[in-house]
Length: 396
Ligand code: ATP
Ligand code: MG
Image 1 (cartoon, helix red, strand yellow):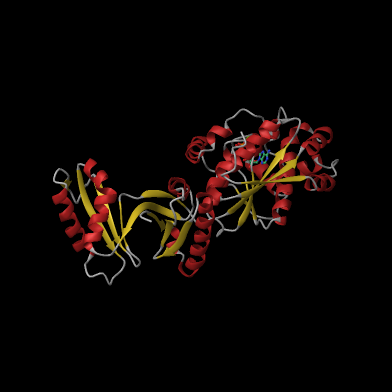
Image 2: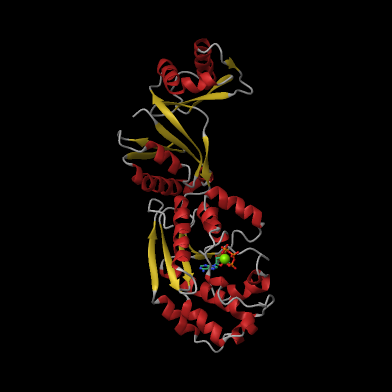
């Protein structure tokens, strides 16, 4: 094969004695991700992941695109491997990068030699190859300070590799090294971004969605399935647990004071999510909550909703401005789907004057007519589990 991807590891390099474990996870993740694109060999050496297409059928463009959304990688480049001698390196550059070089106004060569047995220093390699290229491309100036284009030469253990400028990777830590969490996924803008942020910190993500048919439509559910699918582009495959919430919402409507509707509903959501999560090895919940955004997101309201769970609740967006969240949603590709106008169950039975400064005592009192445990058990008995993968057909 005459093309290979090199992906440089990010923070993993700093992880000392855990480095091996992090690397193994990343290799596993890349292997699994590459399966959709044909036969690829994936290995890690010298803090670099090598992704090598093994036959002509491999979908190199698809694989390259997918590699850009794998967490744990700071930068990645497509390279031409060649033998470790100057002629081979020079020829590889001419063949692989010659056209790019011709389009530039100026260039330089930057070399790295991690194979210390190679008989020339990095500077000597750059000078020699740069000299040959300058002679062959006289219209492209040499500029070692502010070049328009940089040719990279890496002399590594197995071979030499030549490439142009690297692209930024997805950053973060490899999915799975940070444990597993259950994300409460609504149809809104915030929760898919929250899931993405925690996946970026190495968490394996599972999602739960509360669905109030017929108050919310099949389209609203499909929208959430689609949002989950868009998140799996980064997080890898996930299970989406769809909980039927109608009975609980009707029980709240019929038995509780209106000003507490949303708070009581959110307490059910948190508790049910935690229980499903615990069944699946999740050690935390993730929500898209954001301080002050809506009535149920005051400090007092969050204290009351958080009181029903005994595992950490991560709210990675809590201090963000909406604009910043929208920017991330656009970047990761969830915004367009999030803003489709299908209703969420939160907007069903919304109180006209929600309580913004509740105390736990008031809320427990407001819940007293409900058989919470029976309602929760009923909901847990009817969870629909949907496996979601990025390469599935879009749900909408
Ligand atoms: P989002 O944009 O994520 O919907 P929001 O600003 O609309 O957030 P709320 O509706 O108060 O805020 O919801 C706060 C959080 O509660 C959401 O970010 C999500 O994590 C969770 N949540 C809300 N509705 C649902 C639902 N129907 N199913 C699952 N989780 C939900
Ligand atoms: Mg919402």
